[in-house]
Length: 139
Image (cartoon, rainbow, N blue to C red; front, side, top):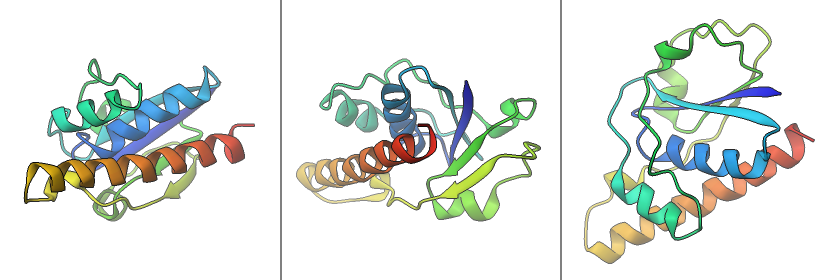
């Protein structure tokens, strides 16, 4: 069983979406953890957009990366440039580190439709990334 950490700035949107998809696609081949270098709480819009695709992240919690320092990770995935550049040292010596920056839909302003479309676009990109990660790294 592989341990996978998904890391973002606030552990509220992108890392939560990735957590949901990775948990779904790995089908128990891995234990998925998500964390932030800060804690912002799980974004309700992220919960809603994931629910539209059949993934329930409503029970997820926003966690600080320091909570997981004792876990030996096989993969550490950063999903935003800020977390990639500011991530504290994580002592998993053999972890494969993967970085993929996704735009932050919570930063989009405008109409409800514009915000919804930003969340949907990011969700689609994260879903594609997660499917590819599982197919190439966990098989």
